[in-house]
Image 1 (cartoon, rainbow, N blue to C red):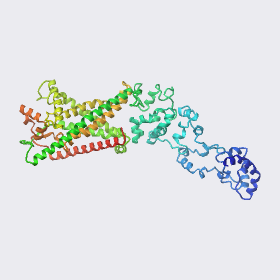
Image 2 (spheres, helix red, strand yellow):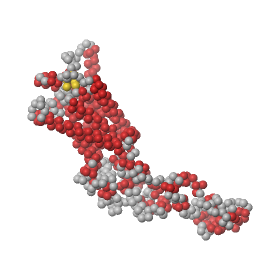
Image 3 (tube, rainbow, N blue to C red):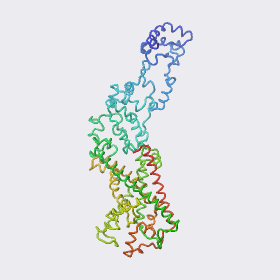
Image 4 (tube, rainbow, N blue to C red):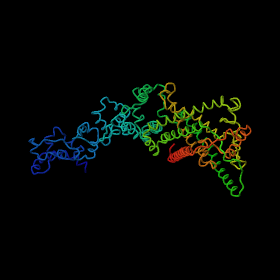
Length: 617
């Protein structure tokens, strides 16, 4: 019925041209046909009847015309139409837009108000409206988006998809957070829709790979102004295929594109895989095998040491119960003269270095893990606590600098130990593999075997020399870590410098290595190392020797009996006897520092477990 009525409406209007005046004289509303009797030369009766406003009378909009006679005598001045009387929602959006600030009103866009038809979500109509003022050079219309919209593809991005229809916000300061967020947020609306990307044969992992990058993680953490967004590389309107000579991501144009942020970008630098996917062996074999190798290292290390820790935890628990039973029955397991006499195990430089290690490691963990697990709410909270990713990055680099300092100290001390230190017997090779060295030797294989026998109740608990095999592993892990996490960190810290002589894909490799090695380091320290120094029954709640450098005679005999035996044979035990123990104030402060570090480490471990429980990777 509605269809039939609309078809008949023009004829009804023509009929009312003759009867309209008589109705108006009786005080009734002015009929549209009456208006068209004069304005029919400018307004098509049929077109108006078929428009979205065709069911309305003329005075629905021109409300100021209340007296037809006065209007015809031009005694009533026709005012501008107030569209907001009907279009309240659109009007509210418009008044919050940049258009209203520029004086652009409804009729400036809707110039066809008398023949205007419902757009039926046809994006071509939107584009046609916008280009009346914008895109005079047809930049958008020549882009992949513009061409697809013109071809009738409603999936492609039109003006309204990014900017909206009426509530068009000003972009503001190009460096502002809202502006920088806009450059990525609007792109994600479509490109995160995998189904839409698939049916349009578009690279459908763009969002995933971007979000896994340094840029994407900062965006997700809430600091888009610090990194590149989608439009910074692909432009906002002139999005073209990679093989198009005018494309911003065409190989010939990449140096200029990258140089917008990385001023010293080179052709080598542009070899970076902006959307490299480490799970794609065909396209990115280097990334695939790097990730495979790092994953294998992670799983292998954790498997070996977590099993070792579980066995030790259980065996240590049994041993403590055995000792308690012997003490309860009056049977002491051994009697040591001067059992609590203190001997020096570490000197001040060792203690200072360990404090540097703790400080830098926790600082790196606190500022790096939020980036690693950027999908988590706690990561966002930590970044906000630091005052933003830029501040977190600054702290991270300071802590990295401290790491290089203590690593340099370790190198110097190692050289001194091998070639110059007095009191150590043998030539450099003998010193390297001797009992005072942290370098692994054949003795460590024997110690591992003895420890395994003790785990399975097949032998007594072994005693060790100056260094145990797990302490040597911790020490050597620092060297491996400096080349892996330190080297990759330097590449990511100074990409423009390394991009002068290394291809850009090394930064993809560095990102994988840095991220996974950091996960290995934090996971190992907060589980295995914490158990060795804090959690095992004979050390709980903390092995304080690293803070005051002192160890009791009974503990030394029980744990490092072979070292004590060697010192006795050399007649040097009393050279290591402490003349005085550490002071109360020092112990209080340093133990407070130690327990604070332990609390932070365990808290970060729990957050990491929570992140993996939430599906982070």
